Length: 137
View (spheres, rainbow, N blue to C red):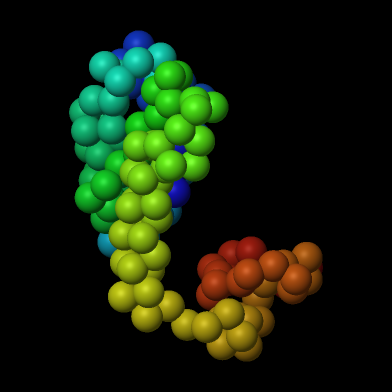
């Protein structure tokens, strides 16, 4: 899941700099990604389709069909947990969860058992098979 504030009809510079610093293959092929953004008004919601989707398509990710945009007026309204923003978040989360489950990711215990290269600081975290370049210490 990735979220950015909208700045001049696109993602923020810091957000883009992060992705500029990683290899275009770093996410791996077909990694499921949920994109989201915040902005001053609903008019800025096109950032999802015109900036975020193309960037993650370039990175060979699978962008979930439902993207989430939160305009200023949707934050802390009287609708609370029942408003339209909540509904979009729930729908997008269900899509992402279904896609991750569909990919048949190994159980956490299986992943830890198959990974002998993780630093010991990862022992208490959720661990997926990691690149051996992380080392052992």
